[in-house]
Image 1: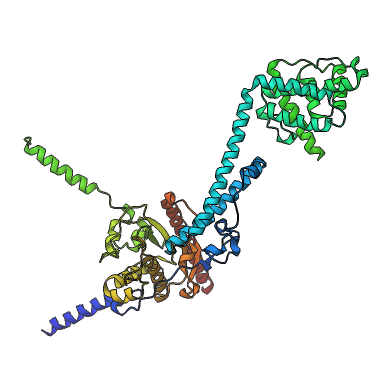
Image 2: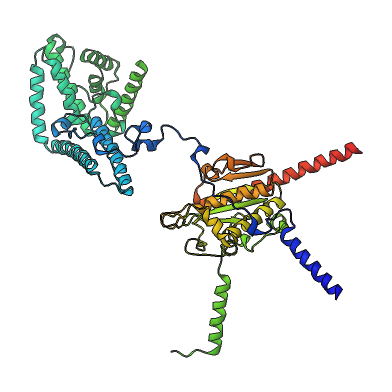
Length: 299
Length: 241
């Protein structure tokens, strides 16, 4: 009997030991004092003050309130008109589009926040957003107009030819004080009709096409003719027509007198050759890229 | 009904049993409830670590001694499911690693794991009311939630981890957090015992690869430490001699 009691006592005590005796055990779970949940905190890491998400707030990281009331919105503003937008360049329109979009995003975020706070007075936000939508629609419309105009010009080959002939005549007969404005007009014309960029650095060398060659020929001949008309003495020395793109290109890159000198030098050295059709584009590409590099070096 | 031969029926039964037996209930490496030190160290070649996985759907946290999980662990750690604390799914895309705790040795790692499981038992079963009192409530007096997500579960797991480390005095612990903000303020941690760090940024698709790498690093580090200790002991012996 005594043996049995002592055995039971032993087995009980051993079980208790197994339950709570270990160094690494909580023992009786009903006596453990549970801890409160640890709330995450942003203080553990730094956030850049110009975080991109600040673009969704009207004043960036200086914004005071997450949700502006209707009075704080600029309700006296008006949309950009078609007339104003038509005067803007593509770059300006592009910027304007994205400024509008950013503003709309800010408003959309505020309206969404108001929704989740069950704050229903967002009519003014919506009104302002509608104005911005109108601006975006008008920007698209203006761009569409330009695209249509551009495409229509491409189809007017006969009228183009007629216009070019008229322009040539007027250019050749222009007086000395008119020629500056005519030259400016020529720059716009060569861009509109032939896609020849006004600035050398804007040339896309991959995009040189047959139009470009035609334009080059037109511009060079125009300039030569005017020069020879102004200086009849040169007419004997300088023979026309120009011998293909090799002789035409100097007139696009330099002013007329320099170009004439260059062409003369080319003719004397025998480098002025009529290129085969297949060599025209590669020649123009390499010549233009050299010219661009040279210009960059000069700057 | 078409007539079936007895052999056919038998075959069918056999096949169904086979299919049931073949069903994969998680990573085989994580099978079994408690893994012994020998199993972890020698058979599976894993480091002294505990992995905390967070459920993206419900916010619940799963503890594991291996860089993977198994239905066995879910059954072990979510013993009293209710409408607020449902038994989570095994889907591997839902469990995102929250923290990897590396310990000084396997004893500590095992102690931490068992301590965490015990505290989960305390919260879910033994001291249900006390645990509930500590949680943030919504207007209806229920644990705060958005959809099915209850952030309190992962916050409790972090508190339990801090509790275990402090209770058992597990010095030399290194915690790798998926996001530094989860560890909360420093006042909750014994900074003489714990060192915090963050996991490298990873694509959730490659989570298992990341965990394998982390585990491999822990094994190497443990081996290095033991080697250094052995060298130290040897030099100590020679000096005393």
